[in-house]
Amino acid sequence: MRACQPWPVPRFTPFRSLRYADENLDRLVAPPYDVLSDADVDELRALSPYNIVHVDVPRGGANRYDRAAAQLRQWQSDKLLGLDKSESYTIYRMRFTDASGEHRDIAGVLGGLEVVDEGAGAVLPHERTTPKASTDRLDLTRATKANLSPVWGLSLASGLAAALVEPGEPVGRVVDDGVEHLVERVSDPDRITAISAVIAADDVLIADGHHRYGVSRTYRDEVRAATGRTDTAAEQTLAFVNELVPEQLSVAAIHRLYAGIELAELQAALSTRFHLAETTSPTATTLAEMQAEGFLVLLGPTRAWRLTPKDGAFDDVRALDGAWLEAALAGTDAAVSYQHGLDEVLAAVQSGRASAAVLIRPVSVAEIERTAREGLLMPPKSTFFTPKLKTGFVIRPLT
Image (cartoon, rainbow, N blue to C red):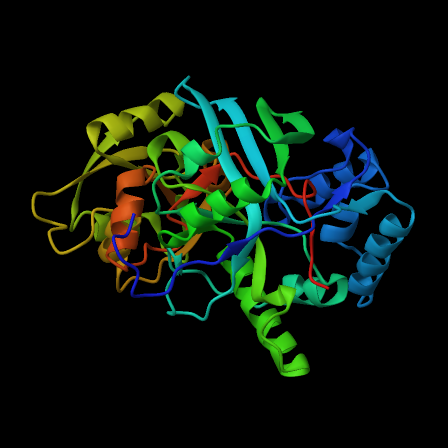
């Protein structure tokens, strides 16, 4: 923790949560909107007419956001959703076995995280973001006047995990794809004060949801302009915050897909900084070997190559696979996109949707913290935090 605090600290506050009244949440909550395919949304909508995707991923014409807002109001009127009687935090736990076979028990807290101006400190980005032209999330926030999906923040303060060990009041449990999701309400004023104090002791790093946080900043500014006030609920946004320590994080890699460049040209560019050695088609075992032995994999439609950094090739580049690839491919016409699943990467290359791909290694928790402490940004899509938080356990009203 900081010995002194001459600079801004993150404000994290409890609020009156809007929650489903039905205890059978399996058919009501959903993964975050930005990982759902159209088929996923179809399946979730079919589970229940009250599944959160009916509001969080509205369909239809230009009035779909107004209809989503009307749906949310109707659910409250019908007592399908109820507002907590008092302000509270919500402890959110995820228990699962990771890809290495290790049992994980991640615990964070849902609350209102202060929305700060870019560069103001206290709440920090951790990677450069790719442009998003769509105003979907902003239009939905304007219409519903609610935060539906939480931003994921990492507290650089020590002690948050310990502060969340004691269970709160159980208010929901869902098991999905081998992950147990549990939520517990904390309404005791002393415990609320203690949790707030821990998070206020150091910066919060945005791990997932940079775009959502940016939308909250725009919405906050609109509310300020309309009301002349700086004390409304728009000054915070819904966030899950857990401690930035290895046992509290499961980080996967987001691999690179390349288009707009021939495989041979890509090989030539990469060979200026990497040794290329032909290898077999990658498997899950290959991903583990990459971490243990320190190599990347270039994947073409029918062949694959190990990429081993040449001595001194990246002395002037941060030790991040994404940064290495940016440096090696600078000046080429390669257009990059991102995919975290090995099977999906293989399919993209074999189908011709990408001319090639490079498999990279997950960023370490130590590197995430080091980058944050130095005030730097990682390349876009450097980290994929798993499992994904469910939408619908908690809704944060903005009125």
